Image (cartoon, rainbow, N blue to C red; front, top):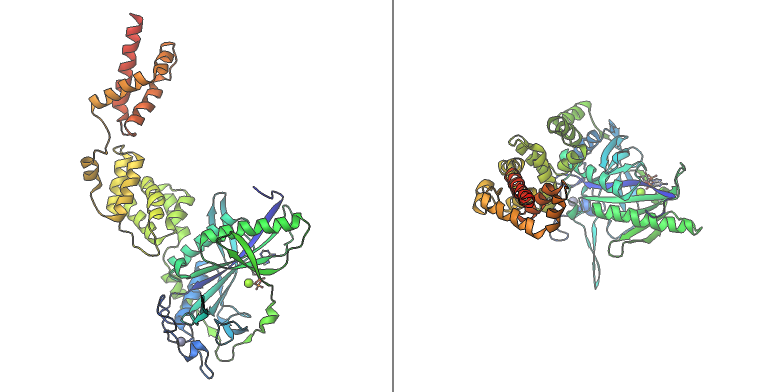
Length: 481
Ligand code: ADP
Ligand code: MG
Ligand code: ZN
């Protein structure tokens, strides 16, 4: 590892679009991908005299997020104006919650290669999104369809230490919010965006260093890479005796480095003040309890259930629950196979890798997955064949046992075939034979390896073992006579 004397200190701010059909302060639709500037009205364009009306559903989703993250839900919260000029913000102010957010506190645990990392949540607040700028060779255009799309911003304490941890936390947060029904979690559509705040300090120190903020990262890989690049950059500055400035930076994906956007503005620069056009947000105990009762079992509870029922590791449980469809597929298959852990491995290794969950549905049928796990568990097919079958089954449906039979992918039991493999292994490996005759005992194991190689791992181990023993016996007899 580079810079072993330093550690990174990382806090995230996450913008997450809520699952509402309409915007937060008007009735315009939120659907992604419409023609530019077709989902706008005087309210979300901020025309003079237009008045906002709060979308109740947005409040409910924010409360759900708070419940899913063990936050305290404020019975009364308020909106404020954050004033700044930018071409994607026609009102020249954003309605957000600054002084009294809807949720405070809470935490979320993420599985990493080194165990569990607990990250404390500072706050969750409601706000409206800004529009999008479209840069063309002739100039920059503004699309206001996204103006007024409801967001929550989740702010974490600076509890993360590495790029891998930050990415694992971001992934876990997405899965929890999707399970809780708060967001569709489509990163490719910008439904979640991550800002990385990062400072470095010498290991063993507790004071925080000066931080920079990298805005608007759109994938888990970008979060990890941005952390690693910025950690490198800041360590380099400190090692050369240069200062780190508090500033906003942009991570350049292509070059893999962060570049300066602007030196840090203060909260003062935004002239926050209470939004005069909206009443306070009041959340009743009854609403909170109704929403709590409506939450499905969330990833940590499922993970525990998988461990207790099928002996899965928490790491695997977290992988499985990272996509709701994958978890549901696994749960259904696990009830149908004698080898639930193999089913879990196949979902983690193949289904999660080969399906783009944001765009496609999983077509693999749980009974088929269970059948493949049974074939593998019974030793009828090798792990490689099992993996290939699962990949194919994600594209089209067929009976795995029939397919294995029709394509001769099953275990090789045929004595003639196996005897030929043993003979070939013996004649190609005179050293194994001579070692054996000099009394070395590992010959049978070495030959088994060769026979497995020749049959692509499909030799029936018991039959092969018998044939190998017979062949070695014959060699011994021949040498003694
Ligand atoms: P602002 O409102 O100006 O963005 P906050 O103090 O609310 O600043 O912090 C924003 C984010 O930056 C939080 O996620 C917090 O954990 C993180 N953060 C604050 N100070 C540091 C620091 N010195 N190093 C790393 N992260 C930090
Ligand atoms: Mg910030
Ligand atoms: Zn509107």
